[in-house]
Amino acid sequence: IVGVTTTDGLSAFISGGFTHANKFCSPLGSTERYSFASNEWEMLPNLVNERGEVVLVEVENQLYAMGGERQIEGVCNGAGDGLDVSELTVGTDEVETLDPSGTAWEVTSGFPRHKFRFAAAADRQGIIYAFGGQTNHDNNCQCFKTTADISVFGKGLGSSAYGFSTALSFITVGALVFAMGI
Image 1 (cartoon, rainbow, N blue to C red):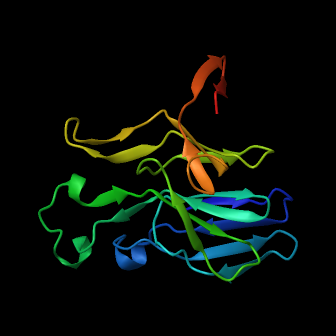
Image 2 (cartoon, rainbow, N blue to C red):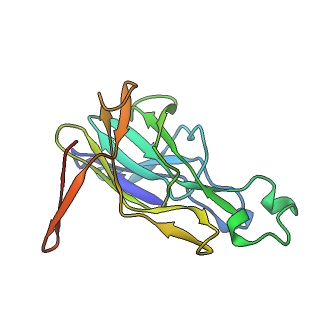
Image 3 (tube, rainbow, N blue to C red):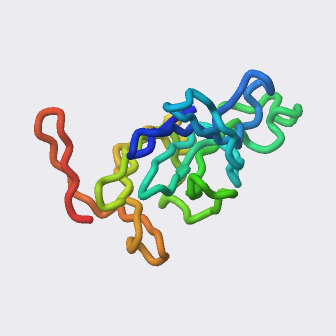
C-alpha cells in the first residue's frame, strides 16, 4: 500500500494493496483518508479497478490512482496451480480520479504501458511525473523488468483531456535528474 499526503498537509490517503486475509489472491479496492488534526481514518469510495501497488498523487484537490498490479483471474481458486510466476500477476495501465470530497472514483485514462511499483509526483503546474517501475513479465529474462522511463501525465497532453507523454530527454547532475522536452 502506498500513501500520499495532500498539498495542504491536512490529510493522507491510502488505497489498494494485498492482504493475508485472502491469501494475497485479490487486491483491495478500498481507499481511506487520514486526518492529521483529528487522528482519525475515514473510509472513502472503492477504486473502480481493484489493484495492489497503486500509486496515489494529489493535484489541485484531485486524487489520482495510477498503475498497479493484480492477480490473473482465477489464479487463487485452484486454476493457478502449476503456473509459473509470469502467469500469476499482471501490471495495469489504469488511471482513476477522485475528488477528495467526491462520492466515486472515475476511470480517467490509461498509462502508455502497463507498470507497477513506480514513484510519482506532481509539479506546481499540476503535471504528474511517473518514475520508473516494473513492467509485465518478460519471458526472455524470466523476470518483471524494471524501467527507467518517466511518463508525464496532465491536462492537455496527448489526444484526450488528460494524456501521457514519454518524449523526454534526461540529464543527471550528481543525485539530481532533470527531464526536458515535455
